View 1 (cartoon, helix red, strand yellow):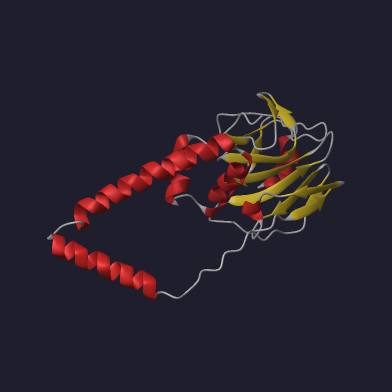
View 2 (cartoon, helix red, strand yellow; view 1 turned 135 degrees about the vertical axis):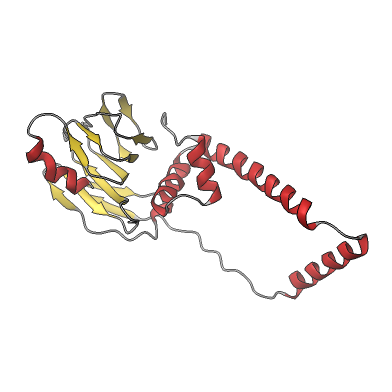
Length: 223
């Protein structure tokens, strides 16, 4: 059961097309897995659409009835004269192999380019071609029994769990969970069976315990 979701503000910005592509793709992937957020987005789309129509109507639907009839007639003529047919293609889901798993990715990632996985111990990363400024987007695979040492974040870290499970100080996460963390959060992710996550970050991790200087390369790998 999915317990962690994008907040309403993020979903509204997604509907408006105002988010960076990396965050928009992450939310689209979450929507493929979460019926509750799909319902929320549908309600937001209806509300925003009605508001837009009301605003446009107040500005544009003016003048005499004859003018309105002429505008409607012209619009219908344009529609019936248009012989172009849009081609629609159903996106096929992309599959990847990492560790000993074959994993089907959300369709939102079907046309996103990605690098080969780079491995460091039990952690492997594939960079996605969605970099925007300081924002980096990756697939992160943690092998069974793997952990990322306790760390905080100098920016934000969005994690969308795609396959497997992991735990931290806040509990256990399931596929579809959308976890947003920042500098106020310290955690130590651990996975017993292994997991694959979509990660969006805008700064490297900051390790705050133990041999942090030795762990900095791991933070840079994730970033």
